Length: 580
Image (cartoon, rainbow, N blue to C red):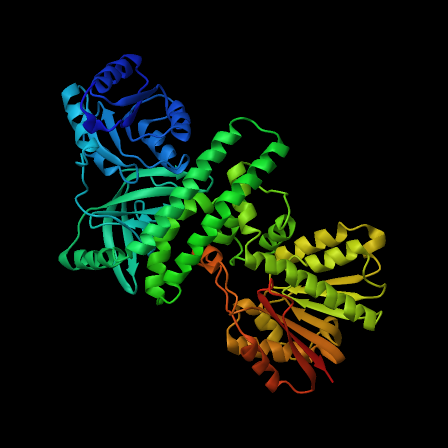
């Protein structure tokens, strides 16, 4: 056995040549290292998902899956970040340029001296880097325009992912081939740098329709370099406390993801999977919640620039674990422009508070279940039930009542009332929303209810945005004289001026003796805000009793105004205004 300085480092060898594997394995074992061998990229992925690995030595040219692709998948699918030494018969600086994000510390070019390899492995095990970047790299999200082609007829609007003095990386919805010359325009908070560059590598991002590209700058003048240095220096100012909390959370998530992967490979039954997810959530949910409470404690007072800087770092580390399951992916990418859209609400309604898990893998089920059961999503269930009762109360007061839902979304409260047969014949319900997809979804849900249950209620659908509603001078017949008008999930996104104008307009649509109900998320109960806002980008405007009650002072003909809170579990305020 060799020296104890190896400290039982476990090395993974990846090469399709059996003779190379045997030769390297003998040499490394003679030095005291533990060695695991794989003859393909797929074998390497299997090993990394099951075993702890300290260093990877990998051939670049392999059939079916290249060494570079293997390292990429190990990092982004197995969530294993370990250094690697690459072996190739094609010498050249291209390999070094393409090593971004793969953890490559050295390249060896065939034919190589086995002693050279052992020396590099020994240097790594003693903490000496085999390859260092010429310039430090930081994670930062800046607006980026990429132009390419001859002439430059192609233009993409993207965001930077990483930045250094020698280049950057970015995501794009389409592939740009390596060796393509491009022009990048980077917006450094109003200072636009236009730089010539070259694509030196790209990789497909699994689970997303995105390509990740690496760019090498071809020429930089002194002023441009100073701008780059200033941005990079500012990005490095992230506090050690924040980094420590983030890395601890990342490690916990990686551990659980690995345990879930091992469980899934046993091909369990649906019942066993449910039991496993329940056991895992009891262990990991308190840890995750604690981490997000601490993250919010650090960032909640930051100015916008500093907040975004920390957010970029946090997302880079945590989104590979929490950002790809169905619900969070929709919240993060916002396909129709905002986080709390009608399908997100449906996910919450369908998977809140029960052991009915959404997802293909046990880890996806675990993450989706966490998202659907944090306090703010629990509050959505309370809000839905509150509004159901308001509709039933209006119907009891007047059998031919008219009800208007503004920002109706998925209209779950209406659908449930129809299913439960809780509404009297003759009630007229109008759903108004700016999103046609939401109205189409609600129509489908309404017409999915048995005919005898739905036909006693008349339902209308209006596609209109808030500004158009406010500006409308002559209200349509459908909008006039309502017994109940309620607004759910709209005021959370409206600034004060528009919020007041909308309140005045909606109160005009209430008939004498009728009622207007407005919901707004509470500024006093912001539990796990770092999870849905800092990580997910679900930005909302939080209000308290005083702010909402102040709006009533400007309304004519108010009989009464009541500020309601359902329970401690509720994170929404309800302002109920009755008309004389």
